[in-house]
Every structure is written in structure tokens, then in C-alpha cells.
Length: 380
Image 1 (cartoon, rainbow, N blue to C red):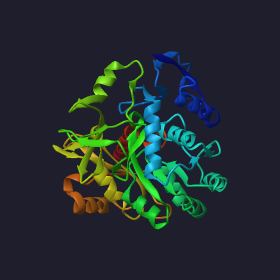
Image 2: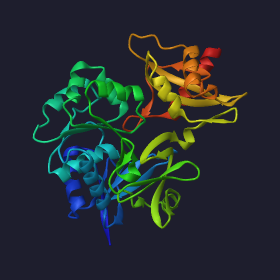
Image 3: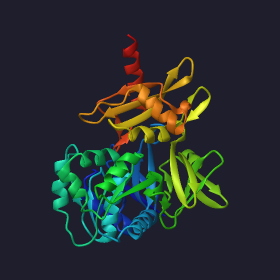
């Protein structure tokens, strides 16, 4: 059995009704924000096709079944305070924003959306004020949005009125989480991807029905009812991403992790690891140290070509407003003290902002290019 796939603009008002029909089986599957007309037949249970660039930048379309989306939405409600009202602050062509709509459909509510245009604290405050108070109140953000909201007193107060603020799309620096918690914001960190219907591990603990294991290469493997059916017209990608382990279908992610006492720690993407002088340096632990230093608002650690070391570790930082960023010597000392000298950045690049892609994920390739260009200018 199959059903048609229909492309729709990524407008919440259009998608909400279409999603409801797709989830119930009364309407076609939908491709939010598809680039050009979609003409395809998909499996009968497929409800949504999410287009993503993937880890390599190669376009791919992830097929999400109604059963997987419903399982994800219900597991989220079970982990939080039950079905409630959502403020939509993320684009709906990406899975995190799309899931706000799915959870709203399951709750029988309509989300409040932010004004069109760039993300602004004032718009978030106004949207929060219009969110009904009859039941739990939720929103979903990426770290760059949380940084901006915590810098605004009224927005910080508005955040405190939510029963949960899901935070995903990129690693959240410990200092950012500490600031949010101290301000009374109920932040819940999430880990997942389009292939798992979005976040499937909350605060290091898998949602109901989700299992986590680490393979011999340190890769995170995920299983459970939230897994995607596969990729549209890409059986080659299906065979690479989805593997059988002990007779159970798993997604073999591109992330490295550690699994201990029922808690998952994500160490970063396998292809983001910097190999310097023969040592492997994952950016995540270095970024965690630097994000806690005074004067740093945001940080991205990348590798750039180096004739002596193969790759050199570089810290690209956005300084906090009105505060002097730390020097390279201070950065190296802090990292050396916490996790060792091989992890210490050999260069420090100060930028006005970090390049992002999608719903606010840091674009590491672009950050590495920015670092290379800046270092070349410093030599001339």
C-alpha cells in the first residue's frame, strides 16, 4: 500500500490541518517547505517527509511514519507534564519545529507562533503573553535563541513561565544551562535528529521505548518506535544508516557518546574530531571548558590544516558584550588544566557571530573556513 506525498509551504496554519489528516490516515503525507513540487508515492504509514542536508551536506529526505511521530509526541508528553500548549519558535521545515505542531495535534491545541522575520526577544515576550494558561506551557529552542533570551530581562521572565523549555539542535554549553537554571528556566536538553523524529533522549535519559547503545567505534546507536522508515528513493543511505544489532533495527548515528548508568553523554560528531599530532581531540569537551570562561558568549572549536601538526585546534569565540575575551594564553591554560595540553587550542579567532545553518546549528565547516581566512590575514 502507498499514499501520495504532497509538498506544502512551511506555514504553521497550513501544516497543522495537513498534519492532522496525515497522522490519522485521512490525507496525503506532507513535505513541509519542500524545494519545488514533490511527486512521489510513499509507504501507507508515512506521514511526513523532512528534507535535511545531512552530516555531509548531501541533500536527503527522511520519511517519518505516523506511528513514529505519535510515539515520539506521546513519549514527550509522558516525560513532561502531559499534553499542553506550545509556543512555536522554530522553522517547521525542520523536525524540531515540526514536532511542536505534531504535539499540538496530539494535545488538541493550536500553537502560538512568533512573528515572521528574525528572532527577537521582544517577539518572544509578546507571543508568550498570548499563550493560553489552561494547562502546561512549553516551547522548543536552540542554544543561540536561549542565549539571546537570557540577555533580555523581560524575555528571561517570560521563559520562567514555561513548564519546560526543550533545548536541542546543537550542544548546549554547561555555562548556558547553569545560567538558565539559576534564572528559574526549566530547560530540558534534548538529543536526536530527523531520523528519530527529533529529540529522543532528554537530559541524558532516553524517552520511553527508546534504547541506546555504543558500538565498538564509540558511535551512538538508537532504537525504538521513533525511528524513521528510511530515506526517499535512497536505499543506499538506508543500508548505511540503519543496522541490525541482536535482531533489532538501530540508527547508527554520526555522533560519539558514552553510556553510563542509564545516562548518555554526547561527545560530539565523529567527523568533527580534530586529529592533531596523532591525538584525537573531540571539540565538545574543549568547548565546554571555554564556554565557562568569563568574556565568552559562544564558542566553536575546529581544526585547520597545519604543516607540523596535521591539524591545529582553533577556538572561534564570540565575546560577551562589554567584556574583554580571554587571551590565547588564558584559553590554553584553562583547557590544559582541565583536560590536557593536546586539547589546548593553538589559535584563537574572535568573531562577531558564529555561522549557523538550519534551525540554529553551528556550521562547523563555515566556522573552520572563517578561522582559516582570519589566520591567513593575521600572517599578511
